[in-house]
Image 1 (tube, rainbow, N blue to C red):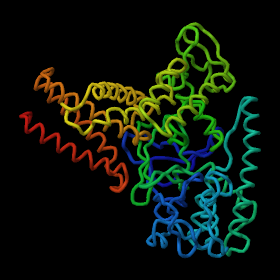
Image 2 (cartoon, rainbow, N blue to C red):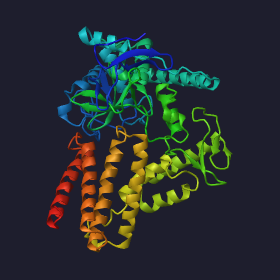
Image 3 (spheres, rainbow, N blue to C red):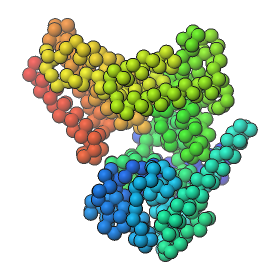
Image 4 (cartoon, one colour):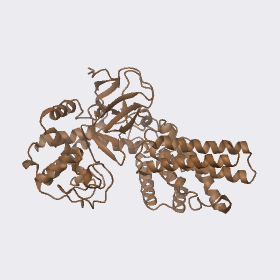
Length: 513
């Protein structure tokens, strides 16, 4: 039975495989606003590094709240409404917050902030408590209905692991903050477990100006997952706004993204199973080629053709070569991907052109050039190429620089092509795509100026390439225009504005305008 709320462009309904969800109540066009709402509760990610609990800027931890000892960025954030729940409870418990625990462990302080805030909000009286009860009553508390025997076994194992995790976090909450002595906070097992389950299944990744945080929303928490989401989230003025990033037909689910769009299918599905109890079977997950990107493909050791999963939705199904039919066990395919992932993680810890190109050369014999781990390497390389002599005059740049410019241009094109297939609206790859547009403009600009100086291109060709360079800069500006000016993205947007002006002046000086 569908539950209709107001006259918005969606209804809340319930389906066996996903629980409650939002579906379009009419046809929605690209860019149309679906909802805009403030969070019920917002807080840091559980694996967060030290950040201010008032504004969510990164912090060294040197400044502590004068009332409760939680790290903040300064005195101005001590009065932040977001910070008040943990401040009140920590003061009442008479404890000092330590950041020595490993991020992501059950006892790490940031693991406990969101459930603590929820407990405090749930224990409030008056209208806020009623709003909490009304909104959370419609959210999901169970998920992952399985059909096959294998999936049922996975579900049982995940449920057992989930119970253990809940018990560990509940114990850490009670012991750390002495909740039994905190007025207005229900520290019973039932209350804590209910809130932890609500968070696991319903919290929404929220990109704020200075960090990605997590939040519970009255309606946005019911947006279901797809690796090909049809919405674009925006955070502005304390509210999450969801816009349609694709046309959405009446009756279709309204979907968002709860994993990393630039991971391969097995990595995404494993992450969703463990974090949200979701077995994703969207079009991308069901497609061995991942929308013709070959984002997880291996290379056949016998005929050098692509090796793809025979059934991406079956974790035990073998992988098969598209050329000679050679079968590769799923265990071997996973081991190969894990080994590459470990090598890439180590290389990106201290990236150099030499080390990353050597890694590429070694692994291109085993995996497709678009493999998602090599995709990350490509994004690092395209930023490193041609950086050493970037500010020198064109006449002073040596052959190595121009060779790297060519590599940079090729890497930018390849990277953008894959991202455009996986995320056509750039809703979930904005940071890396925006940066790639900026790097791409450098290759067009420098190559055009050099070739014109060497009489290799005409004035008309030069003008077209300069206009392309400006267009790429404007694409970057469009992506980062709403970022806070003191963030790297905001600063890059300002750099692009200055660069557009410089290019315009240069074109005027040489008579192209």
